[in-house]
Image (cartoon, rainbow, N blue to C red):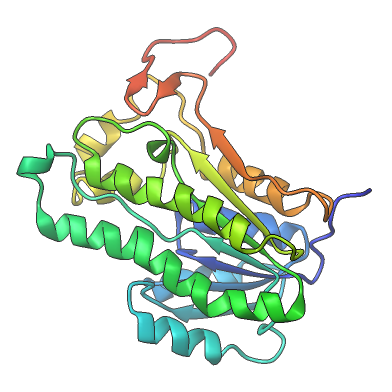
Amino acid sequence: MSSISLQDRIVFITGASSGIGEACARAFAAQGAKLVLCARRYERLQKLAESLPVPTHIFKLDVTDRSAVEAAVAALPDGFREVDILINNAGLSRGLNKLQEGAIDDWEEMINTNIKGVLYVTRAILPGMIERQRGHIINLGSVAGHYAYQNGAVYCLSKAAIKSLTESLKQDLLGTPIRVSSVDPGLVETEFSVVRFHGDVERAKKVYEGVKPMTPEDVADAIVFCATRPPHVNINFIVMMAVGQSTPTTVYRQPIPGIS
């Protein structure tokens, strides 16, 4: 059976203003999908939407605000209401500390965004998918959800929660045609480390020194792959890393033949 066409499919992407979310918007647009894009930085969404060749609906949204999520989904305009693919991309890391030294405000932000935000958006959109008997939820996880690492307890916890959520959703939706996937990358050069280190650009640069990390486009390509499999095929998980990485914190920072 042939792969699924994304032409005119409605794809809802959270955290679409930069990084992997932006790359997903461009990748799905290239496939002819219609886009629903949201993020906290509305001005960036505007610029992105203006550059895309497909119908695009944008709005400002903080996924940690449950009432705002519910209102935004309820207010989707005609032509964008029947979401076919939800990409739960919005997420972040804050700090890199031992648990006993961590900032609780950082914990709250990670848990509220990475776990509760995903739950709020999924809860708002999934009933419509069930009613229409079609849809695909694709979560943006992390290798941190598979391999816990020192000084990252709460971030690892939040991504392990996404792994568990993906597995549980697959069971909850058994017997329906709705698919559930998670794409779980390692080192990807985005604003991730700048956010983690509260704007410390120099410290963030050191994360990627001496290694060729993945790009947002690499991850978007994997997400599109999940979305375009034949309808009887569900990709449960894709765990992906740069060739120069073997665990979240094991990175080879020297030249590798054939990798430039």
